[in-house]
Amino acid sequence: MYIKRYSIASFILMIVVGWYIYAYIPASHESVSIPLFGVNLPPVNIALLVILPMLLLYLASVVHMAFYSVIGGFKLKKYEKDYDKIIDALCDAFLLKEEREHSFRTDRYRLLGKVVDNSKIFPQTQKLLDIENEKLRNIIELIHKVKEGEVVNLKKLNLSPTNPLVVQNNRNRYKSGELSAEEILINAKNYDTSFLKEVFNDFVKEADAQKIMNYYKDFITKESLIKILERVADSENGIELSAEELVELIVAVDPTKDEYIKYSKILGKGLMPETRLKVFELLSEKDDEATPAYLYTAFDLEMMDLANEILDASKPDEYKNFRAYKALKECNKNYNIDLFV
Image (cartoon, rainbow, N blue to C red; front, side, top):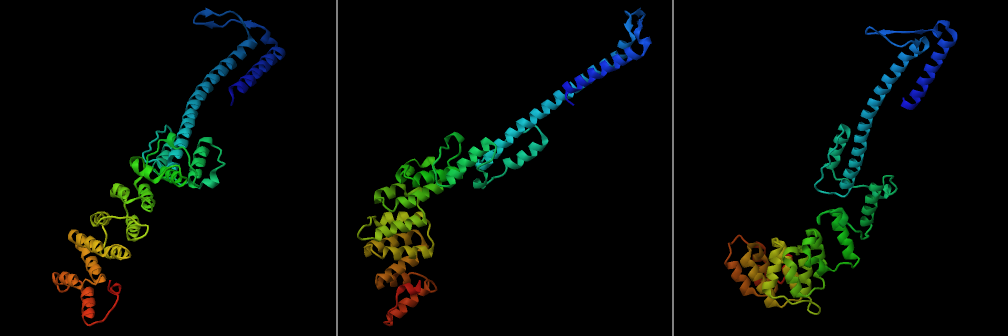
């Protein structure tokens, strides 16, 4: 009950009771003196004496209600503050922040907050763009723009360079031409590794040999290596790399046995035979997994003496496919070496 309404109703009741007693009970017109601790108090009208307990009860009840109203106000204040904190927690969960810890003062919000703080939430932004809470709506609109390929300002959110939202926004900046590939690679510490590798993959399509060698160590992937090798093998519009530089690039991606052979095939499309052979000779010295590719290269270049030398130096049960090719070759049976790898 609201105190104001309660007070009005109480005073009306006291007035009505006092008036009724005074109007319809003649004895109430008299005044009496009540002794208190041996002292006679001034005479008081009987009607007022009847109203006095009601007044005292009213005052006591008002104090009681006011006290619990204040207590309730404090509790409500806690819930309001926790509501604001849960909104902050949801915003951080939408932004995929790594370290999140919000303190709550009420049990229900404390439970909900713990769940939210330890969850990553991927909102369906298209369906939430008209959400009523302004703070959440602003975050959702920002996430939606990034997903749609727009460039937004994320600095005020203090997100880490590895945050998926930051990575996608940088990708948007790169695709829109706001950032160049070389500018990104120069300032690599400001970007996520996966994004840097994507950029390097584009960078090698047009960069010169020197720039490729400057940046490859941290960013080269098997995909970007193939693009580099294809450019090396392109005799018209390619790039020139020494055998030693090619070895550095290939070793950097830790190839498998089959991948070494694949790289030899690519280089065989345009690289000078002696350089190609040198590359796989050096690779075989560094990694036994590259020896089959060295053999493949020797046979592909019709360097039978070298191939025989490699086979003679190996165990009889090794490289059976190449031994079979060699036997057929010695019987004047000409098959494509690719059929044996």
